Length: 201
Image 1 (cartoon, rainbow, N blue to C red):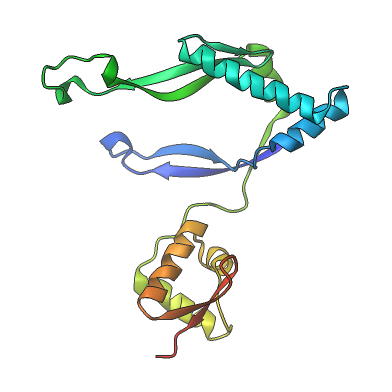
Image 2: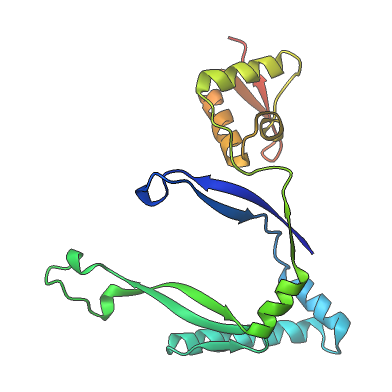
């Protein structure tokens, strides 16, 4: 099963002046509860409602066990456990940490070796044809590109900003909102499919 990845760089990693490379995966959406229930139903005799009832009860038991300080075992998969943090002693008037200063940071998952090996055996990584990183622009440079594009097209969209100018969806929206606020573009269309036109100044 192919999983797309891209390579990113962190400049001046940890203040050392060195560049550090890290891999970002393109994760697909998770199965919904209904999809999971139907898939389990197709391989055994339980009904979707039975599956949902069991999963709900497992969730309740997991909450109880983790809240009691126990690890929670998911059969054939692995263990859930608590990850905690604390308020730094330097922020306390007396420098002492009490139970009120400890907080739940996250829930860890440690897979069983067999489960991990099965996933490793089936997965394959393939470099993505596109990147989620945004090209960096000055406002004037990006606006000149938008003007050039709109000289040949009636409107521009976030999708176009991503494909033509190498922007992430977040950055594309951020820039378009900025140009609308400055009066260079006008926004029309629907909430889910906004269209941006050059303003008649």
